[in-house]
Length: 86
Image (tube, rainbow, N blue to C red; front, side, top):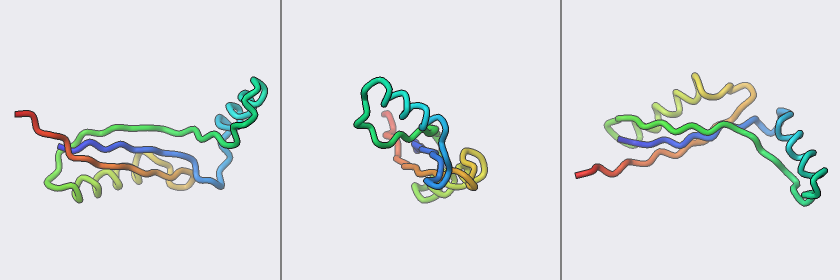
């Protein structure tokens, strides 16, 4: 069993209105030392696979086909093997 932790964010060239609103609000509240806000999506998947490489390929495909809009978003992920309880 493997656990994938996936982060999806807008590409740097895409305007993120939620992040801009948060940054503007922080500035109004006096937190003007915050220079960048990134808003994104986070997913965790638990999956069975024969190997780490196979799990990583499956997660990359899932991200590319479903979890991220590859035209406007990027994704990164980690896959770790889960300890088997005895």
